[in-house]
Length: 121
Length: 369
Image: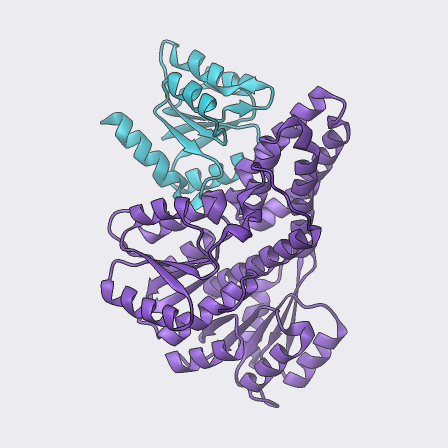
């Protein structure tokens, strides 16, 4: 699967990229909303894995704009945001699922697959 | 296997510098305060992922701190980060092993840039090495040319400087009795020869993590003072822990009842769950001192319960022993990756279980029952 991993934290991109590539996915990375837009203009992705607090950028706004486009990708939030209002905003954007940080590197690929399987059925 | 914690440690000095810089202005400058919270948010997300749940807990407290408490929480977060850098950069492993093949194997597996590994072949050389400098962990072969390894173990436990040091015994004996004897003498871990390289790395990593969290808990105690704030991270709330309560998650009623009898005989209380779902509920409501988790459970398995324990602030630092099947090394490695402190292979001797429970309760600052 072609994945776009959008997170401003290099350590998260490193470990998530490592395990998702290890699980057989092709992973492109972006560190900001701007970089994500560039990657999305360059190619198509099956899944976008998106951080919510993207430095100065708002991941939820980016998600809404991606999902309202002509060819919306499957979108999964990868977030450390735990407050109820943040969770509600994320859910309202209509993602396929939400993965929480900190995550277990050994379980990330499986957890993502479960979300994608559930979204596909 | 990639050592994620080593990668994370290398990035920590940069994170500390950025946090210090923003924190210096956070009192007067709202933008700097927002920047501090952003850095804390990132650390909250990455710490636990890389095997440092204490970073996620301290970072969450800083990110969610009320305005008046921000500086204090950031100071605590900085102290947590600095303690990881300081402990890890001065890690020195002493291996007492006279067989050259094993000595080479140990050196090859464990030596890393931030870690010094010294291998000596006799008890006398080991005592010299210990007198000369600080050692973080000892690997001890039981068959030494100048002394029985068990006698040396006892001597090390009686000496003040090495009384609390992690000591992992290496032995060709696989009987429960031999293991229980070493645990009685104060061993922290026990590895059978031939040494499985991945298992050695995982056990050493887990012992160093346990020692580090015990050290940081001690530093926290020295900080003293009563903090009645609701926003204090749950890791500091050891006072709320029922020090005698051991959670046992095991679907085999017979195994659970054997464990229960043994624990109760030694003044501990068993809280038994026979499936993972009820265990995940229990940890939200009960203050447990330690958890024993069977790997194979119906539905939610032991690994998922372990992940849940590590994710939940109240149990992020609770010692966990995994019960694994004979020959399932992969399960052991996965358990350590997820933050387990120890493992026991089934079938097990109740005496060995109790020795390991007591050791972990001791190193985590609980009074021995």
